[in-house]
Amino acid sequence: MTPESALQELRARMGAVNLRVLEALLEYYQVARMIGQEKDRLHLPHFDPRREAEMLSEILEANAASPARLPDDMLARIFKEIFKNSTEFMGVQQRKTLRVHRSSGAGDHVIELPHGRIGRSGGAEAAIIAGPCSVESREQLLKTATPLREAGVRFLRGGAFKPRSSPYSFQGLEEEGLILLREVADELGMDVITEVLSVKDVDLVARYADVLQVGTRNMANFSLLKVLGSLHKPILLKRGMCATMEETILAAEYIASGGNADILLCERGIRTFETWTRNTLDLAAVALFKQETTLPVVVDVSHALGRKDLVAPMAFAALAAGADAVMFECHCHPAAALSDADQQLDMEQALTLVRHIRDCDACIPSSMK
Ligand code: PEP
Ligand code: MN
Image (cartoon, rainbow, N blue to C red; front, top):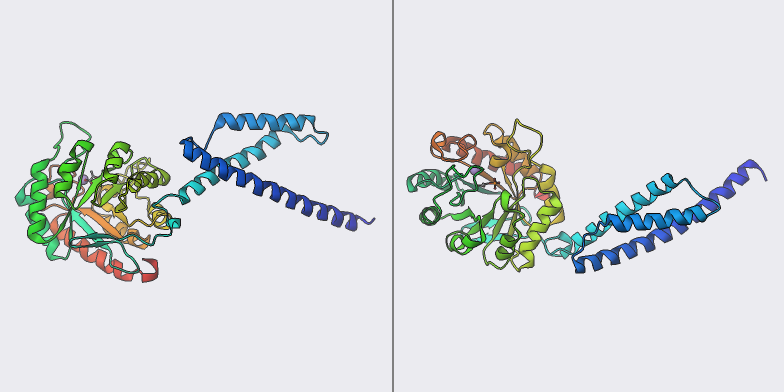
């Protein structure tokens, strides 16, 4: 046999082995899928380091008894890779069964509100949600909301219950703030988006708000999410500042699994090592939330950046990444604001941003919306 024909023969053997490995892998992942489903039913985590260690020692024992024995560390590396992939595979399979997942078969979800809709559904315009960080007084709210409404903004944000880092900072006007939001919004023809901080306030906030916001600090407050799941009002769910995309989608699933499908996902920046911006705006998350779920995605450029000079380019970037809505904070007298004074736009800047968002939105091809 010539060296060439020997090589050919060995290659043919390798090809046949590849197919046997493939067959084994197909069976492996079929079993992994079934294990994943059983674990989901039992509410067990997919990753089980003890079980992996057990399987690996069985494999190494069999290797030791084999005449063609391979180095243990090489075999361990190969199998650890297979185990890691198998855990990821279980996660992907699980994600596909979620109600909020795109593979549920539902199309892009649109949130219908009394004064407008949020959600592109094939080319609709981007929604703008704007207003002060906190509701401070009737005068402040009116002076902020009126020019916004005149510029065509239909969704008014403002906090009545404020999650503040310090207990000595302004905590919000609570019910008085909710009443002001409702009155001003009704007067101007706007919808109210405001935060609910705790389970005990859900009924109260739902009485006044059109959309209830779950803040970044509450994304993993599962008892709150469960209560909101049984509510008949849309929820704007902010991504936790340290939450992965997977955790954010699962938080949305908590609400959806309770029967409330009206959820807006909000990217508001995550904590990183960076200090020049308040948070790091994760635009890949925007594109991925759109790709993975059917939910409309909102980008809060104010909390993501914590500064005014970058809101316009980042709003444009958010729209280009697929956002359905942009949210920002503004105030009739930012220097006197009781919270987030540094990041709130004055009304002139706010109206410029509204124009800018509209201009940018007009540049996004409808196939990308
Ligand atoms: C807010 O939108 O008022 C707010 C407090 O935002 P976050 O939860 O993103 O910090
Ligand atoms: Mn704020």
